[in-house]
Image (cartoon, rainbow, N blue to C red; front, side, top):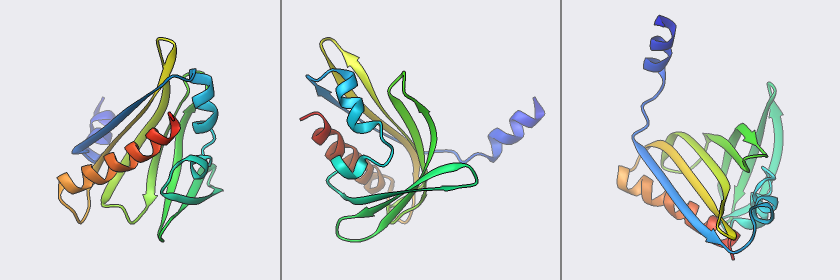
Amino acid sequence: MAAALILLSAAPSLALDAAYRAESASPPAAVWSKIGDFCGIAQWHPAVESCALSAKDGATLRTLALKGGGAILEKLEARDDAARSYSYSIISSPLPVRDYQSVISVVPTGSGSAVVWTGKFNARDASDADALKTIEGIYKAGADVLVK
């Protein structure tokens, strides 16, 4: 119990929560086939020019080259193909966030599906409102493309 309390107190407290949900008439399996590839984001997110996979210490990493310049290094934290979901964290990026953790998933809805993208993070070199607006804009831009 004492060890758990020490770990909890050492973990960063994440001040901001971002979320976006986009509905699709397509079945969940069809939408997951686009999202499920961790480096496939370069095929559907309008801000991503390219993606390169790598590995370090047993972890799967992706480096996203952004259109207009800049790069984001992300780590795959967990993946559940049966639940059509994966979580990842940002190692380094030009985004105004730190301690970023995110989950993207596809859930069934009636005869279609929904892309659900959520994140927890702290603002870095920006106001909370600006950091939240940036991340929510990223989620909206990507998810809206996926459901069209």
